[in-house]
Length: 130
View 1: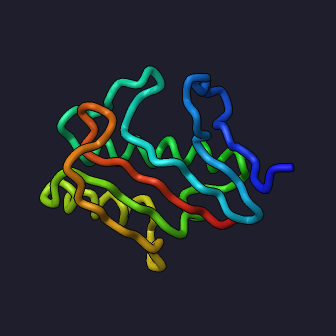
View 2: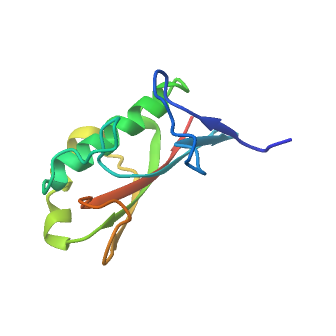
C-alpha cells in the first residue's frame, strides 16, 4: 500500500509518458512537482519573460491544490531553479501578489546553468500543508 496518493488537476490530461505525478499527497502535505511555465500543449508561455512563466507555474499549482480543496495560501515552501539572477529578482513582485504575506512561504533559490525544457527561464517545485 502506497504512503502517498497522486494528484492530477481536474480536466487535465496528464501524458502517460511521464514517470512522475504533478503532485502527491502524503498525510497533510502536498508535494508539487517541479514545473515550468508551459501551456496545456507543452509550449512555453511568455518566451523570454520570467514573470509570465512564473505566473503560469503558480496557475498550474493552484489547479493541483484546488483538486485537494487547497490554494496557493497553503504553500509553505518553494524551491526555484532559475537561469539568471537578474531575471529571478523580477519575480519578487509576483510572489508578493500571489502569497499576500506576511507570513511568506519558506523559499530556496538555485541559480542553474540550464533547465530540461527549452525556453524555460525558471522551474519551481513546492510543498503545501492542508
